[in-house]
Length: 399
Image (cartoon, rainbow, N blue to C red; front, side, top):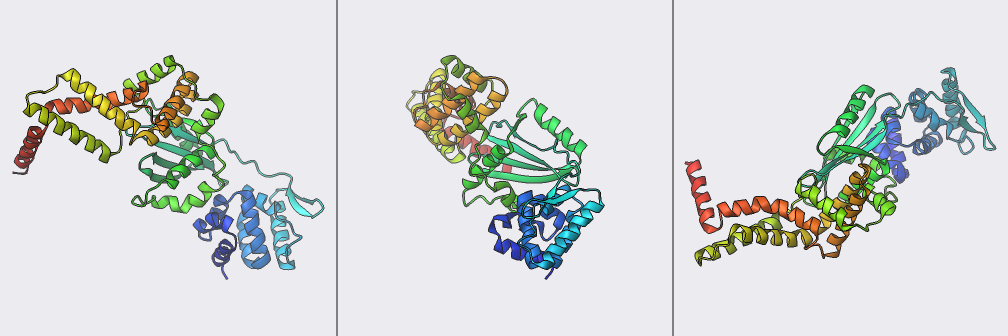
Protein backbone atom coordinates (compact mmCIF):
# COMPACT_ATOMS: atom_id res chain seq x y z
CA UNK A 1 0.00 0.00 0.00
CA UNK A 2 1.01 3.62 -0.42
CA UNK A 3 1.31 6.01 2.51
CA UNK A 4 -2.02 7.61 1.55
CA UNK A 5 -3.73 4.19 1.56
CA UNK A 6 -2.22 3.28 4.91
CA UNK A 7 -3.31 6.59 6.41
CA UNK A 8 -6.83 6.04 5.17
CA UNK A 9 -6.84 2.67 6.90
CA UNK A 10 -5.50 4.33 10.03
CA UNK A 11 -8.34 6.84 9.88
CA UNK A 12 -10.83 3.97 9.69
CA UNK A 13 -9.24 2.27 12.71
CA UNK A 14 -8.73 5.49 14.72
CA UNK A 15 -11.95 7.57 14.69
CA UNK A 16 -10.54 10.13 17.13
CA UNK A 17 -7.74 10.99 14.71
CA UNK A 18 -9.73 10.61 11.48
CA UNK A 19 -10.72 14.29 11.40
CA UNK A 20 -7.05 15.24 11.26
CA UNK A 21 -5.85 12.43 8.99
CA UNK A 22 -8.26 12.70 6.07
CA UNK A 23 -7.91 16.42 5.24
CA UNK A 24 -4.15 15.92 4.77
CA UNK A 25 -4.76 13.57 1.81
CA UNK A 26 -1.63 11.58 2.54
CA UNK A 27 0.71 14.60 2.75
CA UNK A 28 3.04 14.10 5.76
CA UNK A 29 3.56 17.84 6.31
CA UNK A 30 -0.14 18.62 6.20
CA UNK A 31 -0.84 15.65 8.44
CA UNK A 32 1.47 17.09 11.05
CA UNK A 33 -0.31 20.43 10.84
CA UNK A 34 -3.72 18.82 11.28
CA UNK A 35 -2.79 16.72 14.33
CA UNK A 36 -1.70 17.56 17.84
CA UNK A 37 1.60 15.96 18.86
CA UNK A 38 -0.08 13.23 20.93
CA UNK A 39 -2.40 12.34 18.05
CA UNK A 40 0.48 12.39 15.57
CA UNK A 41 2.40 9.97 17.80
CA UNK A 42 -0.57 7.58 17.89
CA UNK A 43 -0.84 7.65 14.09
CA UNK A 44 2.89 7.05 13.72
CA UNK A 45 2.76 4.13 16.16
CA UNK A 46 -0.10 2.61 14.14
CA UNK A 47 1.95 2.87 10.94
CA UNK A 48 5.10 1.49 12.56
CA UNK A 49 3.14 -1.54 13.74
CA UNK A 50 1.21 -2.22 10.52
CA UNK A 51 2.96 -0.51 7.60
CA UNK A 52 6.62 0.13 8.51
CA UNK A 53 7.66 1.04 4.96
CA UNK A 54 5.01 3.76 4.81
CA UNK A 55 5.98 4.84 8.32
CA UNK A 56 9.54 5.27 7.05
CA UNK A 57 8.28 7.60 4.30
CA UNK A 58 6.44 9.61 6.92
CA UNK A 59 9.41 9.79 9.27
CA UNK A 60 11.72 11.10 6.55
CA UNK A 61 9.54 14.22 6.41
CA UNK A 62 8.77 14.49 10.10
CA UNK A 63 12.42 14.47 11.24
CA UNK A 64 12.77 17.82 9.45
CA UNK A 65 10.08 19.44 11.61
CA UNK A 66 10.11 20.16 15.37
CA UNK A 67 6.56 18.91 15.85
CA UNK A 68 7.42 15.77 13.90
CA UNK A 69 10.44 15.08 16.09
CA UNK A 70 8.24 15.56 19.16
CA UNK A 71 5.85 12.95 17.78
CA UNK A 72 8.75 10.54 17.16
CA UNK A 73 9.92 11.01 20.73
CA UNK A 74 6.47 10.22 22.10
CA UNK A 75 6.34 6.74 20.53
CA UNK A 76 7.41 3.81 22.70
CA UNK A 77 9.32 0.96 21.08
CA UNK A 78 7.96 -1.68 23.44
CA UNK A 79 4.76 -2.50 21.57
CA UNK A 80 6.32 -2.33 18.11
CA UNK A 81 7.36 -5.29 15.93
CA UNK A 82 11.00 -5.55 14.90
CA UNK A 83 10.49 -3.79 11.55
CA UNK A 84 8.74 -0.88 13.21
CA UNK A 85 11.49 -0.52 15.83
CA UNK A 86 14.12 -0.37 13.09
CA UNK A 87 12.23 2.41 11.27
CA UNK A 88 11.85 4.41 14.47
CA UNK A 89 15.52 4.03 15.38
CA UNK A 90 16.63 5.13 11.90
CA UNK A 91 14.41 8.20 12.18
CA UNK A 92 15.88 9.04 15.59
CA UNK A 93 19.38 8.63 14.15
CA UNK A 94 18.51 11.03 11.29
CA UNK A 95 17.24 13.57 13.80
CA UNK A 96 20.46 13.30 15.82
CA UNK A 97 22.51 13.78 12.69
CA UNK A 98 20.73 17.11 12.24
CA UNK A 99 21.82 18.23 15.71
CA UNK A 100 18.60 17.35 17.51
CA UNK A 101 19.31 15.48 20.72
CA UNK A 102 16.81 12.70 21.44
CA UNK A 103 17.61 10.72 24.57
CA UNK A 104 16.18 7.25 25.08
CA UNK A 105 15.35 6.72 28.73
CA UNK A 106 12.70 5.61 31.23
CA UNK A 107 11.62 2.13 32.17
CA UNK A 108 9.98 1.50 28.83
CA UNK A 109 12.88 2.90 26.83
CA UNK A 110 10.67 5.50 25.14
CA UNK A 111 12.57 8.13 23.18
CA UNK A 112 12.41 11.54 24.82
CA UNK A 113 13.26 14.88 23.34
CA UNK A 114 15.89 16.65 25.39
CA UNK A 115 16.38 19.57 23.02
CA UNK A 116 14.42 20.66 19.97
CA UNK A 117 14.86 23.58 17.61
CA UNK A 118 12.99 26.51 19.06
CA UNK A 119 9.53 27.07 17.61
CA UNK A 120 8.29 30.65 17.84
CA UNK A 121 4.62 30.49 18.82
CA UNK A 122 4.24 34.24 19.22
CA UNK A 123 1.91 34.40 16.24
CA UNK A 124 -0.58 31.96 17.72
CA UNK A 125 -3.76 33.43 19.16
CA UNK A 126 -7.48 33.94 18.71
CA UNK A 127 -9.64 37.04 18.31
CA UNK A 128 -13.31 38.00 18.31
CA UNK A 129 -14.80 41.11 16.71
CA UNK A 130 -17.80 43.13 17.75
CA UNK A 131 -21.19 42.51 16.14
CA UNK A 132 -22.18 44.55 13.11
CA UNK A 133 -25.65 46.22 13.01
CA UNK A 134 -27.24 43.08 11.55
CA UNK A 135 -25.82 40.90 14.31
CA UNK A 136 -22.96 39.12 12.53
CA UNK A 137 -19.35 39.00 13.67
CA UNK A 138 -15.96 37.74 12.55
CA UNK A 139 -13.79 35.48 14.71
CA UNK A 140 -10.22 34.39 14.06
CA UNK A 141 -7.91 31.58 15.13
CA UNK A 142 -4.22 31.94 14.29
CA UNK A 143 -1.76 29.09 14.65
CA UNK A 144 1.97 29.09 14.04
CA UNK A 145 3.26 26.55 11.54
CA UNK A 146 6.35 24.43 12.14
CA UNK A 147 7.58 25.40 8.69
CA UNK A 148 7.29 29.11 9.52
CA UNK A 149 4.56 31.70 9.21
CA UNK A 150 1.04 30.97 10.35
CA UNK A 151 -2.37 29.76 9.33
CA UNK A 152 -5.38 32.02 9.87
CA UNK A 153 -8.90 30.65 10.26
CA UNK A 154 -11.59 33.29 9.70
CA UNK A 155 -15.26 32.55 10.43
CA UNK A 156 -18.31 34.78 9.94
CA UNK A 157 -20.89 33.90 12.58
CA UNK A 158 -24.50 34.96 12.98
CA UNK A 159 -26.84 33.79 15.74
CA UNK A 160 -29.70 33.53 13.24
CA UNK A 161 -27.88 32.42 10.08
CA UNK A 162 -25.24 30.15 11.65
CA UNK A 163 -21.75 29.74 10.20
CA UNK A 164 -22.14 32.08 7.24
CA UNK A 165 -18.61 31.97 5.82
CA UNK A 166 -15.29 30.28 6.58
CA UNK A 167 -11.89 31.03 5.08
CA UNK A 168 -8.37 29.71 5.69
CA UNK A 169 -5.22 31.66 4.85
CA UNK A 170 -1.50 30.97 5.11
CA UNK A 171 0.85 33.91 5.43
CA UNK A 172 4.33 34.92 6.55
CA UNK A 173 5.13 36.31 9.97
CA UNK A 174 5.19 39.95 8.88
CA UNK A 175 1.87 39.66 7.06
CA UNK A 176 0.20 37.99 10.03
CA UNK A 177 1.44 40.61 12.47
CA UNK A 178 0.14 43.32 10.16
CA UNK A 179 -3.18 41.52 9.94
CA UNK A 180 -3.47 41.33 13.74
CA UNK A 181 -2.74 45.04 14.05
CA UNK A 182 -5.42 45.78 11.47
CA UNK A 183 -8.23 43.75 13.04
CA UNK A 184 -7.50 44.95 16.58
CA UNK A 185 -7.24 48.66 15.70
CA UNK A 186 -10.32 49.06 13.54
CA UNK A 187 -12.44 51.95 14.84
CA UNK A 188 -15.64 49.93 14.31
CA UNK A 189 -16.11 46.24 15.05
CA UNK A 190 -12.50 45.90 16.14
CA UNK A 191 -11.35 42.52 17.43
CA UNK A 192 -10.00 41.64 20.87
CA UNK A 193 -7.94 38.66 21.91
CA UNK A 194 -9.67 35.61 23.35
CA UNK A 195 -8.80 32.05 24.34
CA UNK A 196 -8.49 29.74 21.35
CA UNK A 197 -10.77 27.16 22.95
CA UNK A 198 -13.40 29.83 23.59
CA UNK A 199 -13.40 30.88 19.94
CA UNK A 200 -13.68 27.27 18.81
CA UNK A 201 -16.64 26.95 21.18
CA UNK A 202 -18.32 29.91 19.47
CA UNK A 203 -17.88 28.26 16.08
CA UNK A 204 -19.15 24.92 17.42
CA UNK A 205 -22.26 26.58 18.83
CA UNK A 206 -23.19 28.10 15.48
CA UNK A 207 -22.49 24.85 13.64
CA UNK A 208 -24.69 22.91 16.06
CA UNK A 209 -27.56 25.33 15.44
CA UNK A 210 -27.15 25.40 11.65
CA UNK A 211 -30.52 24.80 10.01
CA UNK A 212 -30.79 22.15 7.27
CA UNK A 213 -31.57 24.77 4.63
CA UNK A 214 -28.21 26.48 5.20
CA UNK A 215 -25.22 24.53 3.88
CA UNK A 216 -21.99 24.83 5.83
CA UNK A 217 -19.15 26.54 3.92
CA UNK A 218 -17.18 24.00 1.92
CA UNK A 219 -13.82 25.02 3.37
CA UNK A 220 -15.06 24.25 6.88
CA UNK A 221 -15.50 20.56 6.10
CA UNK A 222 -11.76 20.10 5.66
CA UNK A 223 -10.93 21.58 9.07
CA UNK A 224 -13.98 20.61 11.09
CA UNK A 225 -12.30 17.69 12.85
CA UNK A 226 -9.34 19.77 13.96
CA UNK A 227 -11.29 22.81 15.13
CA UNK A 228 -14.10 20.95 16.86
CA UNK A 229 -11.97 18.38 18.68
CA UNK A 230 -12.58 18.36 22.48
CA UNK A 231 -14.60 21.59 22.24
CA UNK A 232 -17.47 20.36 24.44
CA UNK A 233 -15.66 21.34 27.64
CA UNK A 234 -14.77 24.84 26.43
CA UNK A 235 -16.60 28.00 27.49
CA UNK A 236 -17.35 30.84 25.09
CA UNK A 237 -15.88 34.27 25.97
CA UNK A 238 -19.27 35.42 27.25
CA UNK A 239 -19.59 32.37 29.49
CA UNK A 240 -16.18 33.12 30.98
CA UNK A 241 -17.20 36.69 31.80
CA UNK A 242 -20.46 35.51 33.35
CA UNK A 243 -18.52 33.17 35.61
CA UNK A 244 -16.11 35.94 36.58
CA UNK A 245 -18.55 38.85 37.08
CA UNK A 246 -22.10 37.62 37.57
CA UNK A 247 -25.09 39.45 36.08
CA UNK A 248 -26.15 41.90 38.83
CA UNK A 249 -26.40 45.26 37.04
CA UNK A 250 -27.13 48.73 38.39
CA UNK A 251 -29.67 51.07 36.80
CA UNK A 252 -26.81 53.40 35.91
CA UNK A 253 -24.97 50.63 34.05
CA UNK A 254 -28.13 49.63 32.18
CA UNK A 255 -28.61 53.27 31.22
CA UNK A 256 -25.04 53.46 29.97
CA UNK A 257 -25.57 50.34 27.86
CA UNK A 258 -28.82 51.79 26.47
CA UNK A 259 -26.91 54.94 25.53
CA UNK A 260 -24.39 52.84 23.58
CA UNK A 261 -27.30 51.29 21.69
CA UNK A 262 -28.83 54.69 20.96
CA UNK A 263 -25.46 55.92 19.65
CA UNK A 264 -25.42 52.83 17.40
CA UNK A 265 -22.21 51.52 18.94
CA UNK A 266 -24.10 48.32 19.82
CA UNK A 267 -27.05 46.82 17.91
CA UNK A 268 -29.73 47.21 16.65
CA UNK A 269 -29.60 43.52 15.60
CA UNK A 270 -33.05 43.43 13.99
CA UNK A 271 -35.32 40.39 14.23
CA UNK A 272 -35.34 37.86 11.42
CA UNK A 273 -36.78 39.13 8.14
CA UNK A 274 -39.98 37.08 8.10
CA UNK A 275 -41.42 38.08 11.52
CA UNK A 276 -40.22 41.65 11.03
CA UNK A 277 -41.97 41.94 7.69
CA UNK A 278 -45.13 40.51 9.22
CA UNK A 279 -45.07 43.21 11.91
CA UNK A 280 -44.42 45.97 9.36
CA UNK A 281 -47.29 44.76 7.16
CA UNK A 282 -49.60 44.72 10.17
CA UNK A 283 -48.66 48.28 11.08
CA UNK A 284 -49.26 49.41 7.51
CA UNK A 285 -52.71 47.82 7.44
CA UNK A 286 -53.57 49.36 10.78
CA UNK A 287 -52.50 52.82 9.64
CA UNK A 288 -54.38 52.42 6.37
CA UNK A 289 -57.59 51.64 8.24
CA UNK A 290 -57.11 54.61 10.57
CA UNK A 291 -56.44 56.89 7.62
CA UNK A 292 -59.60 55.73 5.89
CA UNK A 293 -61.59 56.59 9.03
CA UNK A 294 -59.87 59.94 9.45
CA UNK A 295 -57.96 58.96 12.61
CA UNK A 296 -54.37 59.14 11.42
CA UNK A 297 -52.08 59.25 14.49
CA UNK A 298 -49.65 62.12 15.00
CA UNK A 299 -45.90 61.55 14.70
CA UNK A 300 -45.34 61.05 18.44
CA UNK A 301 -48.11 58.47 18.72
CA UNK A 302 -46.84 56.65 15.67
CA UNK A 303 -43.29 56.58 17.04
CA UNK A 304 -44.50 55.18 20.35
CA UNK A 305 -46.63 52.51 18.66
CA UNK A 306 -43.75 51.39 16.49
CA UNK A 307 -41.39 51.25 19.46
CA UNK A 308 -43.84 49.17 21.53
CA UNK A 309 -44.56 46.80 18.65
CA UNK A 310 -40.88 46.24 17.93
CA UNK A 311 -40.11 45.94 21.63
CA UNK A 312 -42.51 43.01 21.86
CA UNK A 313 -40.84 41.44 18.83
CA UNK A 314 -37.37 41.88 20.34
CA UNK A 315 -38.61 40.27 23.55
CA UNK A 316 -40.22 37.43 21.59
CA UNK A 317 -39.00 36.22 18.20
CA UNK A 318 -35.55 37.81 18.48
CA UNK A 319 -34.96 37.21 22.20
CA UNK A 320 -32.79 34.07 22.07
CA UNK A 321 -30.43 35.37 19.39
CA UNK A 322 -29.98 38.77 21.00
CA UNK A 323 -29.52 37.25 24.44
CA UNK A 324 -26.50 35.40 23.11
CA UNK A 325 -25.23 38.55 21.42
CA UNK A 326 -25.42 40.46 24.67
CA UNK A 327 -23.63 37.62 26.48
CA UNK A 328 -20.75 37.77 24.02
CA UNK A 329 -20.75 41.58 23.85
CA UNK A 330 -20.16 41.47 27.61
CA UNK A 331 -16.73 39.99 26.88
CA UNK A 332 -15.83 42.81 24.50
CA UNK A 333 -17.02 45.46 26.95
CA UNK A 334 -15.20 43.77 29.82
CA UNK A 335 -11.97 43.67 27.80
CA UNK A 336 -12.45 47.39 27.29
CA UNK A 337 -12.33 47.88 31.06
CA UNK A 338 -16.06 48.49 31.71
CA UNK A 339 -17.11 45.80 34.18
CA UNK A 340 -20.39 47.50 35.13
CA UNK A 341 -21.53 47.71 31.51
CA UNK A 342 -20.45 44.10 30.97
CA UNK A 343 -22.75 43.10 33.84
CA UNK A 344 -25.52 45.16 32.21
CA UNK A 345 -25.03 43.13 29.01
CA UNK A 346 -25.39 39.91 30.97
CA UNK A 347 -28.46 41.20 32.84
CA UNK A 348 -30.07 42.18 29.54
CA UNK A 349 -29.37 38.70 28.18
CA UNK A 350 -31.05 37.20 31.24
CA UNK A 351 -34.10 39.44 30.81
CA UNK A 352 -34.45 38.40 27.18
CA UNK A 353 -34.25 34.72 28.05
CA UNK A 354 -36.80 35.16 30.84
CA UNK A 355 -39.31 36.69 28.43
CA UNK A 356 -39.81 39.88 30.46
CA UNK A 357 -37.67 42.27 28.42
CA UNK A 358 -40.33 44.23 26.49
CA UNK A 359 -40.09 47.15 28.95
CA UNK A 360 -36.40 46.72 29.70
CA UNK A 361 -34.47 49.93 28.97
CA UNK A 362 -31.81 48.36 26.74
CA UNK A 363 -34.33 46.37 24.69
CA UNK A 364 -36.42 49.52 24.37
CA UNK A 365 -33.34 51.31 23.02
CA UNK A 366 -32.83 48.57 20.40
CA UNK A 367 -36.46 48.90 19.32
CA UNK A 368 -36.14 52.68 19.27
CA UNK A 369 -33.16 52.69 16.91
CA UNK A 370 -34.85 50.32 14.47
CA UNK A 371 -38.19 52.04 14.97
CA UNK A 372 -36.88 55.46 13.93
CA UNK A 373 -36.26 54.29 10.39
CA UNK A 374 -39.49 52.31 10.29
CA UNK A 375 -41.61 55.19 11.59
CA UNK A 376 -40.17 57.54 8.99
CA UNK A 377 -41.02 55.04 6.28
CA UNK A 378 -44.56 54.62 7.59
CA UNK A 379 -45.08 58.38 7.63
CA UNK A 380 -44.11 58.54 3.97
CA UNK A 381 -46.07 55.43 2.95
CA UNK A 382 -48.67 54.83 5.63
CA UNK A 383 -50.64 52.04 3.99
CA UNK A 384 -52.34 50.75 0.87
CA UNK A 385 -52.05 54.05 -1.01
CA UNK A 386 -48.32 54.10 -0.46
CA UNK A 387 -48.08 50.53 -1.66
CA UNK A 388 -50.09 51.40 -4.78
CA UNK A 389 -47.82 54.37 -5.46
CA UNK A 390 -44.81 52.13 -5.06
CA UNK A 391 -46.27 49.61 -7.49
CA UNK A 392 -47.02 52.42 -9.95
CA UNK A 393 -43.46 53.68 -9.66
CA UNK A 394 -42.17 50.19 -10.25
CA UNK A 395 -44.28 49.84 -13.40
CA UNK A 396 -43.01 53.20 -14.66
CA UNK A 397 -39.45 52.08 -14.08
CA UNK A 398 -40.09 48.89 -16.02
CA UNK A 399 -41.57 50.92 -18.89
